[in-house]
Amino acid sequence: MVELTAALLRTPLAETLNAELAPIAAARPLLPTTEAIRPHLERIDAHRWYSNFGPLLGEFETRLSERHGAGMHVVTAANATQVLALALRAMDLPRGGLCILPSWTFVATAHAVMMAGLKPWFLDADGDSWTLDPSVVADALARAPGRVAAVIPVAAFGRPLDMAAWRDFRDRTSVPVLVDAAAAFDAAAGGAQNCAGLPLAVSLHATKTLGVGEGGYLVTEDKAFADRLRQTTSFGFLGSREAMFPASNAKLSEYTAAIGLAALDAWPETRRRWLRTSQLLRIALSMEDRVQFQAGWGQDWVSSVCIVRLPDQSANAVETALSQAGLQTRRWWGNGCHTSAAFAQELRDELPVTERLAGATLGLPFAIDLTPAEIDRVATALAAALEEFRAF
Image (cartoon, rainbow, N blue to C red; front, side, top):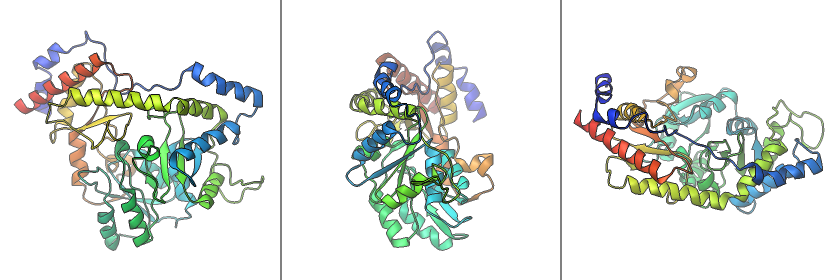
């Protein structure tokens, strides 16, 4: 593979698509403008309430819960990693218990497991959904090397999960399920899937489709669980100044809520723009049968990243070739959590699908305002890089 990469750097692609063209970043986040946020900031000035569950945060959480449907409760936190970790703690799981999760996920999932006092057990992803298969996880319980305290399926890059299947898994096994839907604001809150009675964590990071800079939230139909999680984000307080149990401080401020409200105000138009850009990129690559999009991406659901499946073992070479063309790509999940030093000693199964995905998937340059000219450039460069890979 080293020889192949070196050869690609000497090809016409690397000479033709060169530094004369402005680089295109892998991601180009776009949050609400100052003017869009200003009316909400003026409300903060009027109230002089800046944090500690003020009126803007209350409104933001109410609007989020309404997107998920009647009877749902939303609890925000400083980021989605905190949401996952604190939700696991709020579940009152046995310390040191195993938490099953895919290695094919962002490292935040695994960090949250360890922050909650649990031990990760990495299982392999399904080749189609790129995440855990509930039937495979159910079979794995019989050979677990310890007590399984919880399972975290991950909505891969925002793709909807089969929530009914995971609810059935929970009901049959009595193993708690916490869904990591960090990138799935659209799918989770827009009707492509619902919570199906399972707690679900969503990220509001600047790189997501609905971003506030830093933030996240959990949605659940269980009010008692929502109240418990709320306590864990605020020193163990609930209606008094007494800390009822060891907790954290992970609240969102009114200023973050102001950005969130402006983002929700603009969401219908924002989603339309994500759809438009996604579909233009799909069209530009529609004749390239060596590029596979996630099922439904840019059609049934939107995400702020474009992850494509390429021929096996081609990702490194294609990434290098596109970089030489001024196109920044991103291996958003690296080679899987199990390859990071922080988790190298944790329990794991054989992970052939994870390893295959690591060598065959790539995050293309993608943004809500990617221009037609940039899309054409990405498509042309990718097709040329794949042709050169095949030639070698």
